[in-house]
Image 1 (spheres, rainbow, N blue to C red):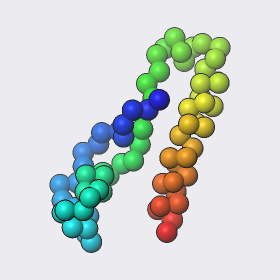
Image 2: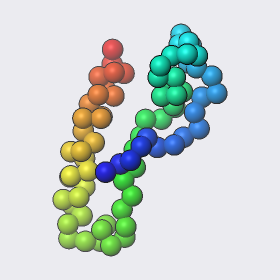
Image 3: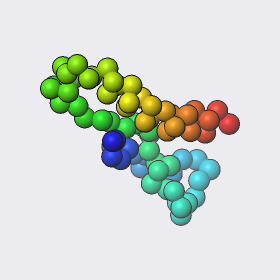
Image 4: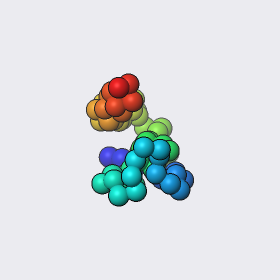
Length: 73
């Protein structure tokens, strides 16, 4: 539904405290953890749009919950 993470300009270096050979180095360089679901104008104007918004939110909820927990530690 979303594809990959939204492409933002990553950090040039690893965040402080992480080695350059960390197995998740490329993810650690991300400044933004966001996803995008492109929708056409026809979908946005359709009677099913509200259902699509709810479906999208429910699909994204586990990702959001995980990030909230990971950042709260």
